[in-house]
Length: 133
Image (cartoon, rainbow, N blue to C red; front, side):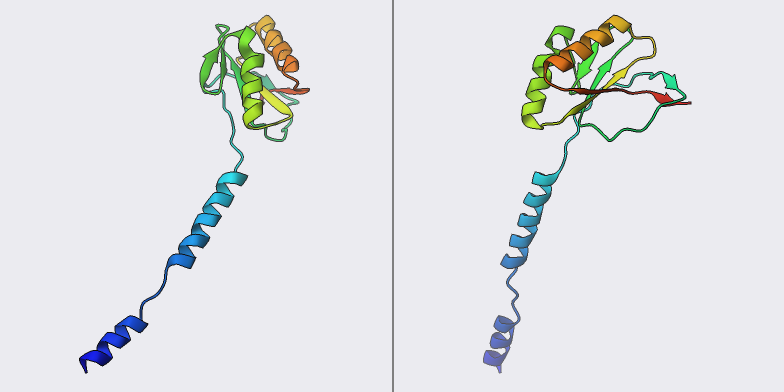
């Protein structure tokens, strides 16, 4: 009787290896296909615009604060270093569009310098974020 019980227990085992293989393959698939967004890292008071339209989402955001600070990838950068930082981000994840989140009271000159640096990095499509009325 004891031998019969041991054989039943041996037959009742279930091999989990194939299921774990499938789970790991799915995990790798989702990690590889995930799109990561490079946010500016700060909140700004965007200007309101009655004709603001929704654009397709971009992967890289650059924020310009009221006091002239420029933020990319959750850290403050110098205006002259925007192109170099943008090239680094483009090497990690290529994109053809960048969104500038300029504060409502940000100086126009700083925003133009940031746009110039973006063009220098090879991005042709630049959007400026605004709030709908």
